[in-house]
Amino acid sequence: MTIKEAQNEIIDEFALFDEWMDKYEHIIELGKDLPIIKSEHKTEENLIKGCQSRVWLHADLSNNNILFTADSDAIITKGIIALVIRVFSNHTPKEIAESELFFIDQIGLKEHLSPTRSNGLLAMVKQIKMYSIAFQAKA
Image (tube, rainbow, N blue to C red):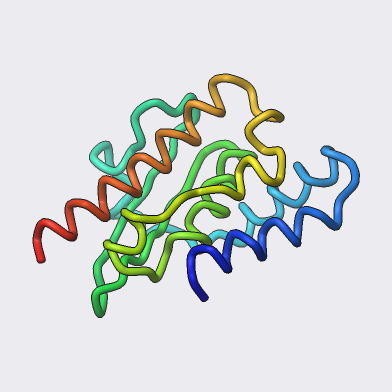
């Protein structure tokens, strides 16, 4: 599945909910299903700067695809990082670096986040893009 297809899938998924409380509930459920990051990756180095909550993000390159794992100490934030990882994980560094992220606006997430959570979301995406650029530079 391409990055664009993953985003469209998320948009379709969120279209099933009429109320934002239901959408938040869905985000929380997605966070519960987030694969657990290995404890050795929950380090200061993997903490995302700019998030009010503690969010750890780790990236591995395997067969020229980046695989992301993450965790957060806040349930909504954990669901948000689960969505972002779902879009970007298992794609090449080039695909990630060149992709446009549109699902956040399309599902209305940006306008329903507090300013601090919104800043945290931008920091998550920025960190993922930085990983993709770093892996491209290594190749």
